[in-house]
Image 1 (cartoon, rainbow, N blue to C red):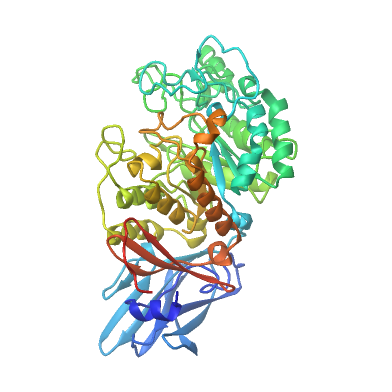
Image 2: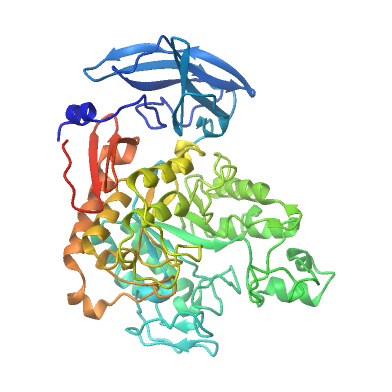
Length: 572
């Protein structure tokens, strides 16, 4: 492929993003200067080029000067001072009575607001290890069984090779018996795949298979092997240099958690203030949606804050400590945390959790379940990133949509069929989300094709292996931290969230899609070793209905990437 030909055949516009080629530092110190570079096609003419940036919320400008000429494009740059923690800027090009703004959303021949400005956060960035990470998501009950244990009274025991029943009274209590002993025994599969991170859904004791209704945050569920099996797993994971991400809900716990039982019994107890007691609700207390078993936590209580994240032995800090060794947290229901009716402590709680994690283990990843990627959550002071459902997965589903084999509706969160979109609509949808947050928060967000809460990608494309592999290729070449849901690499199916929580068929491995698995291994290796994918920016070169051509550029490497949903002819 010729980069020069690709450029010449494309309709190029001025380009800038937050990667190393364009910004001298994505985490500068206050009082320092940062150099901003922009690449401008030689066919694009202007008389004056400026950077407009904000200092103490007042706008000012810096003149662009030419750095170098190329055959197709030239480099221009300007140096600006870093006086605030959040530095917002955009570029202005003026000629013959006309002007155009370049911001994170694109090029506009009219005035634009600052919501989509490029942004630099002047705070330390300690999670640089994420840039070369590929995570593997495990739902503990369904990955591997190492020890046969009797099922508790609340559970419906299931045969390992059976399918989940789906919607019904047994949905949350069907127990297949996966455990940490089984995960450790099959760790070689994850190592062989090439993943260097594992994201676990909750492993705390509960009375459900998903464990989002924790009856304790103090230990690992005995059904998973307890702390002993967890420590053995962690020892093996660290030896293999695999990072481990825990999953916790800061929004609610179980109605059988000691905090709730004590608080309900005694109005004078400190624990009583941990919850919202509301007679207008069906159960007399606020819950996650209308689930009786999940009472909502009230962070107006100083004692709850202390126990949950402020104290050294708090839930958040304890599991990051050297003894337990987690490398970060995925926050379940991150968007609802700290919010109830007229009370909104969300931002404060989010930032306090970040501070607590920095105190215990500064280089940890804090990623939240927040499908809408609210810009206020991703401003460099709270979550490092979110699970990028709306800014990546949903647009990707709509573009790759092909005879989907899904439960009725099924467009993740919307009771409608998946739409069919063009390449331009796909890119526009992603750009809308990307442009509202700093680059560092985009690349620290989790990108995914599916998860334990969604249908499987194999079903979205109607079983089409080629389309599934193309989607996997995009996942592993797009900015962000890619996460592969256990079983996707062998072609597991699932028509909705619960149906997708199928077990790994270790005794039937000869029937796995091995060609697909081997291709995924190659993509994972590329993602973890390519300088362009580790440090590079994102530039769309050619966007058509059925194919996308984009560039990932870094100091040491350029990659031109073609992704097609159907057979297509592209001249590059």
